[in-house]
Length: 119
Image (tube, rainbow, N blue to C red):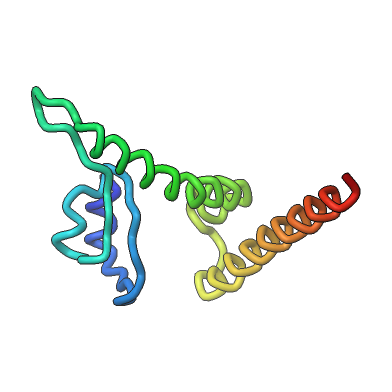
């Protein structure tokens, strides 16, 4: 099932102040959610302008950060396959995994700062 169709059917409520930056699979999300942005698709037989290409690159630079986090979280398989444990504990486990990942990021950041000071 396409991503956008899954999103529409899920009934997920997004806060009024949250901005959604989605890929081309979510074309049309702006009709449902005002604070959303998707890359500009080229029209049939036409090319994108330089400004449109620049906008798409900027949007993709923002999205890639989130995609990398998603990839790291999928290593734990809780987000990449069917969850087979008690569903009431899913949130707890997802939060623990996110905490582990955030801890790893913090350690890397501290090590990078330490390396900068020794140079």
